[in-house]
Image 1 (cartoon, rainbow over the protein chains, first blue to last red):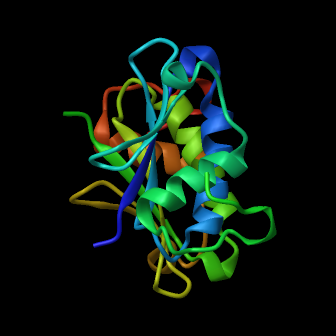
Image 2 (tube, rainbow over the protein chains, first blue to last red; image 1 turned 180 degrees about the vertical axis):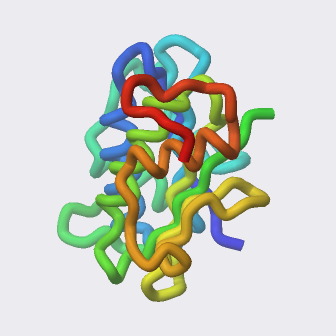
Length: 93
Length: 93
């Protein structure tokens, strides 16, 4: 069974568009590797987390801000398909 | 537990953007009623389905085409929160 990536975002912070943008990026890059991407409106103010069912891949509060999508993709890759190359922009995060 | 809406789309048909657009619409309208919306790249050519875990809400092949988002929202509403009003554009689908 392929993993599902979850993106939990704070709708009051206006992060729906950011979350769906990231979902598009992840679904384009990891189309073969994921089952899907779930967008979850958070009930926790200020939360923005990207995770699998058992691992937090990115947490805005922990990182004290957002990261560029290139970094996000490296973190996701390291978690779900560590052997995959992300192309010319890639180096191990 | 709130329901999760699944949108399964054929990536070869180029329906990722359409699927994420619909996810944004559903997450805006049903923010309080759903747990989340899962975007799933389909392995079945030409598939575009919107469903809950136990019910197909919309199927492009069954309908022989796409429907306007107003209709999609009415179908989702009828399934997950039949008492909710969708505002001025609304009438029972």
